[in-house]
Image (cartoon, rainbow, N blue to C red; front, side):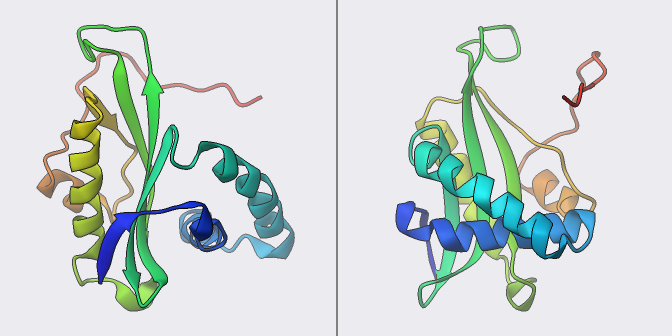
Length: 154
């Protein structure tokens, strides 16, 4: 098993894993929804991958079996992130037949190390129930921010 950063040559597999992750999270997407996600995701990854998007993967004979995506975001500095360098973690996913082998943990450890190398102040995430124990084990903590997260869907 090899743990490394994904490249443009991996985009097709990353799209497939994103659809698998979303299907696990939201229920089976169906052909049209999956195709739409892939159609939008390919150009996104072509532009962002290796720049402000770092994807770390575990490979088994070339097949990506586990991944974690880190979006690098510069924000105005604050007491929470004094240098303004933050990361948003998402799409931590392991193929079903490879689960319970510690692969997500290994991928996450490499991602966290890369975050430190990039000088990030913080890595933020929204944890699923399944991922929550792993994130705690890796040192993540529940956010104690007094602001209530909200969003406006446009």
